[in-house]
View 1: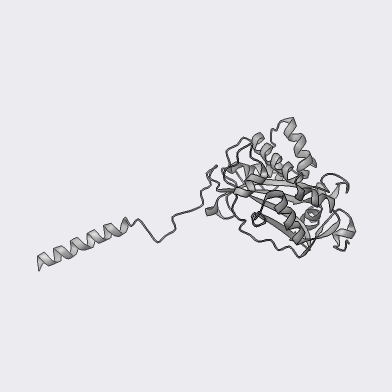
View 2: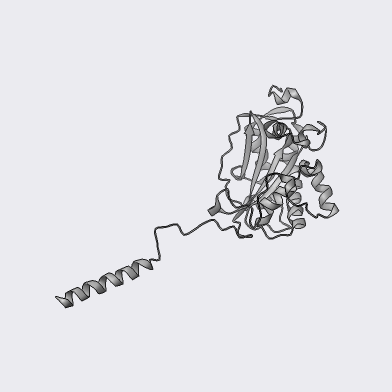
Length: 263
């Protein structure tokens, strides 16, 4: 009897040891790691400023919306929102890596940027030109999660933005400012710009029938000399599907188009 009890006890001890070292535990093996440089993809986030202002900027009192001349470059071209490193295990939360969240953009410390970068940011990031401090927010929220120094981070974002602005897609938007276009035509232009089957890698965000956001999915590794088209072709599909209508307004800063009645 004692020998039987001994074997039972030994079996239970060995079983517990085996279970505690189970190489396939039931709990998740991944979690959000906010260590800088852990991105498995990127997004180049661009905006169409007139529609962005109608959707967000006027209510918030953004100077780039209230004071911007309708015929300016910002009003008729894609502009830079940011370059966002992403980590799948974090969902939407791979940001503010070792950085403190501030209530207002201008609460972050100012950035020391070379004059060449500063000059180009004034053209491609309207908030920077008008003192809205978006560049500070973007650096601390997203730039903190990658390994490039601040000047190289913005130089890369600006180069990719220039390529988008000068692409057939960017030129098409500029030519149709203040007009309505077919969504199918936009998708065709996207494929002409970035290659076959790339429309699933680019998110078109609309509000009230107007194009507001263009989010371009990019791979984890972005060689500094790699062009935007080749990067898009290497990227995964964008996880979110755009909800733009069949006919989309490419807004300008006139009240007529902001009411969505342009021809």
